[in-house]
Length: 336
Ligand code: B12
Ligand code: SF4
Ligand code: SF4
Image 1 (cartoon, helix red, strand yellow):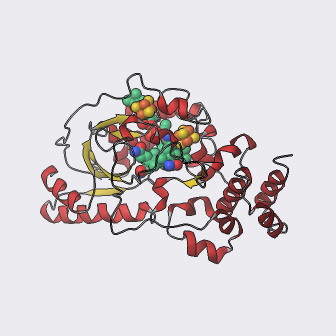
Image 2 (tube, rainbow, N blue to C red; image 1 turned 90 degrees about the vertical axis):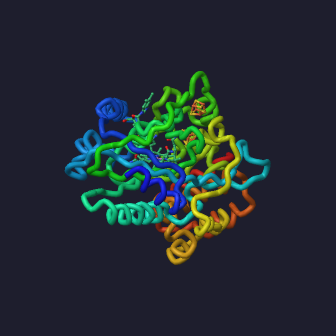
Image 3 (cartoon, rainbow, N blue to C red; image 1 turned 120 degrees about the horizontal axis):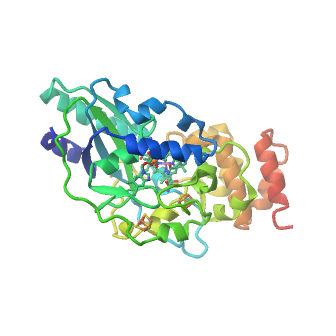
């Protein structure tokens, strides 16, 4: 199976292929511990389907292994940003939504494999299934989990999206090496602006900018506001500083999928539903929804002392959304 998979995944432009066992007991206990420390913040979806996270064969009866696919999305960003650089969005979000794109690629690969291996049963999962995807990726033994909690491939780094395909085949291993890991490095921990990585290998989502700007639906607590002058959707800092990501790589998500150019902060703060669909439809930014993106843009405008602030504040004075109203009110007093 592995030789066929290698050929097919290369044809789809994928960068990493690994096979892992489904023995997740140790990782599941770590996950439970993480939940018990409330590090999931408001992401209640992580509290569901514990049985599947512990035993992925509940998603596919007879599952014996997971095929892990990796797609690199490095854009060549550097940290720190240049002076006067506008607030960024995280690199993974600059393309069409990867869930759909990557799922289509994985489905094509396995449909073709199925022709050669009719007894194959499989299930493709990209991000949305309740699986410990990073733990599974690390079991494929071509990389490791870093102190920033990302899966880092030895040669591709961590700007990799992951897909997991559960299969009913015995895992004939694709392992090539065992990584050296983080060792004494602490660069992600010291550079995380909010202290979210202060415990080795364990993220505190309650402090993570990615959580607040993507997943959180209400107001963003004031202590995180200054950091939105660097990132107003997601955050890449703990990966940009990592030595495993310093090697220059071409943007390789898919040459046929150009990166999207998004409107400036002022336009984003003021966009109506039709603008939102036009600018952001079909991209990962829709995870934050229209009002979440407007909220983020208002904060970013204000904390970066953008010249458009006064106009935005005036135009949104009667906006019906309560979060937009409270964000505007806090923003108005921000420098007082
Ligand atoms: C919830 C979630 C988030 C949350 C929480 C992040 C987190 N670290 O858990 C928030 C919103 C903060 C987030 C942010 C981001 N996310 Co996210 N997220 C997820 C999601 C849906 C679930 C993750 C989860 O279960 N977390 C709970 C923790 C406890 O589990 P875990 O991190 O998987 O850790 C397990 C193993 O790593 C292992 N383990 C942990 N520590 C150690 C230590 C050692 C020594 C060992 C051996 C093992 C080990 O055991 C853990 C528990 O079982 C996954 C998709 C999925 N289904 O897995 C994507 C996923 C993790 N996210 C992804 C991405 C791209 C991001 C961002 C880069 C986006 C951005 N630029 O803003 C940031 C990165 C922030 C960071 N440093 O992690 C990718 C990561 C790819 C990669 N190379 O690692 C994933 C896998 C989606 C995908 N399919 O590609 N995310
Ligand atoms: S994504 Fe940003 S805020 Fe979150 S842990 Fe990494 S550096 Fe810290
Ligand atoms: S920055 Fe250093 S400590 Fe953090 S994940 Fe990379 S190698 Fe590990």
